[in-house]
Length: 396
Image 1: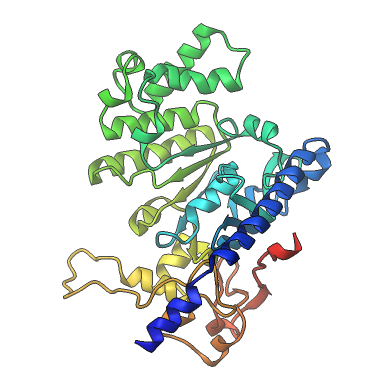
Image 2: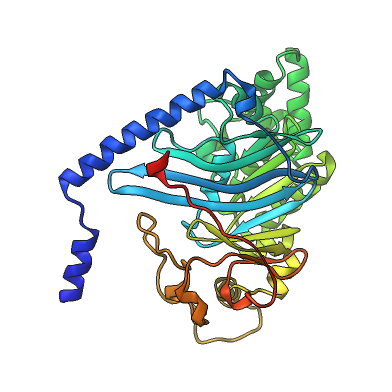
């Protein structure tokens, strides 16, 4: 009972403290917004160089935080991985691990001014080895990229499509915005072409329909048509099959795979469904509590998982034909994102702890050419690449 009281006291914030945090947040977010606006005056402030020109996007120690009245929520904290050209990268992890915030950071769709990308670089390849640092790109410039060179397919098409506009108008809008040189007839022809491309047989009929007149699978096909209308270099698919039944899921995944090859695009697939990732991804990134804890090829992750959390995820998925009394459940809970520990975030839940785990957060360890893990159990087996870096908001 005494322990519970102490725990309650430690998480309690007085009204005075909350006001202090709010004042600090307002001051900091105002400064960050000003820096973003000032960046528009000098392109050198948001241009960079790709580490590998064969990548379409590179996340390099990206930190995206939310400034709340109870403290700073480190939703994404030192995330680093790449999306190679013409490849599918699956980003997996339990709900709240930072998958969607990572994608929203890339699209500059974090709810500002509360949500901000405060550290690291998100390099988007613009050719000749040059890159735009999306974290610093001004809003006007980002509007030219979003929906044109980088597109996103959201979780629930019914809430993403506007219920008062016809399907044709909504696909047309993307083309009219990014290709003002196209005539009205050309825009309509391209829209009908896209509806046919995503497997809608009655394209003329669907063009004049409202979203509520379509099934969930058809609405998701429309969302894919909108995302691919401008032939983007990167498609972000955030849980694209969540609200669909298994048969329609398979159709949508097959469609995405075929269309990616047709337009030579890359896919960043965000999901908690390991079956979907195994079916679609060339590379897999495993996230936990706002950080990447393991990454590699799909074969590395599914056949040779190394991090205890990844192993736990694999053990917790049901296997056809295997009878078990209960599915495996990873014990414990995720640490408080406002007050993260300075040691391995998974330590308190880990069943494979070693002596090193009592130290600071583990570095990234390269255990093969394609396989990287953040776990002290592999300190003697691979090359240490470096440590993920948090951003100290007091120094911003």
